[in-house]
Every structure is written in C-alpha cells, then in structure tokens.
Image (cartoon, rainbow, N blue to C red; front, top):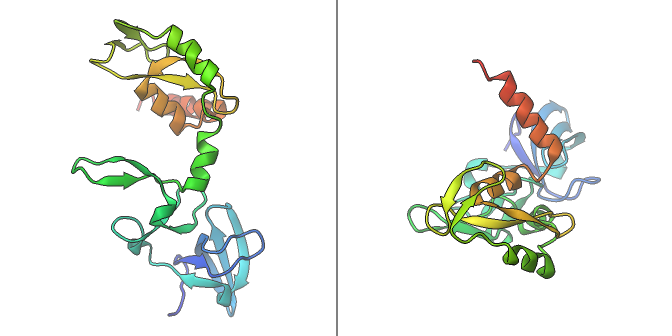
Length: 190
C-alpha cells in the first residue's frame, strides 16, 4: 500500500526515542524519506518508509482488539487499558489512557493516615463543596469524595465528585486551570 500525506502510521520498530507502535501523521514524502509527526512525543522526524506502516484508525477502539492511548499515542491491545465504568447500555468501557500512562496520572494514592483525618471530619447531613459551592444532602443528592494531592498523597478536603473529576481532567495543574480562565474570559461576551 502506498503512503500519502495525512495518513496515520505506526512505527514498525523503535526509531530513536519513538517507541514501536507509536502513532504518527505523515507530513511530507520525499523519495524514501518520510516526515512524520509522532503525536505522543510531539516530535517530527524524518525516517525511512521501511520503519513505518499504515494505520487505519477506524479499526481501533471499540469493538476492535486494539486502541490508541490518549496520552502516549501508542497502539496497544485492549487488555492494556483498565475498565473505567459501565456505559448507558450496561457495557463495560475502558479508560482512554493505557495502564502505564494511567499510573502517572493517578500518582501517589491517598495515605491511610491522611484518609483517616478526612474520615474524622466527614460531612453527615448537608455538604457544601468548597469549590463549586453546590449544596447537597449527603448520600442523596450528590456524591462527595476525599480529595488529595497526587504528588504527595496528602489529604486536601472533601469535595463533590464533579469537582474531583474536573480537577482530575486538568491534572491538578494550576497552569492548565489558568489557561481555562483565560479561555473563558476570551469567550465571555460572545
């Protein structure tokens, strides 16, 4: 099969610091030299066409047996992804990040002693999230969770599960959250 600009490819072997099965996008083709942007490394390299293979991205993810990790962008087997939750049709879904990348995201677990500190101040009737200020009846109108620092394992506070998910999506990264503020301000009056 001939390769074209804007085709997705995978590295058929390790190329410098690009892992085998890394996913890339062809940017330029010159004779046997192909310029590829490897998404996971955010890096463009020139390589031989012998080092890459075409990837039909429509044959990845559900229901196929292979999936591209949304962090490292390496094509992996479905068992390299942990089960996340059940969808609306009671089917198990897997996380978008592979188990290796997920361990980096999850970081240090909440230390047992820290969890006990939060247990001692667990809300019992009415809970107000310290971030979104949503008020809820404990265990009835909203779930709340123990939040912790994923770099140290130190407890922070009880927060609602929505805010916990939000912090997780932004990787507890203050710089990313500052970008969110800039973005919202940019589009505030549109």
